[in-house]
Image (cartoon, rainbow, N blue to C red; front, side):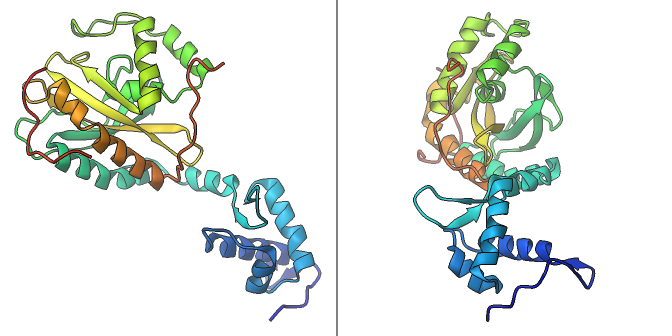
Length: 284
């Protein structure tokens, strides 16, 4: 039954307009496909005229939105930004954990999830695979971005200006004979990561290790991390890595979905599942 609107005042220590606003937000959140103004009014017990002014305010603040082709209300970016602010590293680790376990089970190798830490990639959390002789990438370890798969994946998510600024400060220290030697080589690889969503490290940081990583995005479409795995060269050929492209792409997409991401076009830096095996084997 529709209630009679009352003046905006304090009732029992509550501000009525805030009560109404949060009631509307909570009701919209229950409808993933959106809800019309009339249906929303019936659900929260408000006249349509009163609710219209309330929802218009929430839309202007970014907490609600309406679709371009309909009049249905949906949750706005402001709500997701508030939610993201509550998502600390412990929650990110908990969210990534089952996907790291899944990737480790499919590849047999140690898996890891990385985020930015200053100008380097931070291994935020990891999971040991079932194969013998695992690569030990301890949580909390920092890695250079220009010669690691996780680093290239993170670089691929930077804006053109941020990428140029970052790349200009890189000192290309030769960790191995395969380490990228200059900014041009790096740009070519990062552009490929932007196209494919997949990054590789072909013995560039450690001469005995090959790695593969994929970008992880949040609800804004920004790259917030990278998920990947590492294996010893005698068990991980480039051909083996290529066969796991769809596996890691699928898992990274699922994980991104947990952070609210929906696929969309991602700008370039120049814009101003296979059969499971118990081991990876062979050399390229």
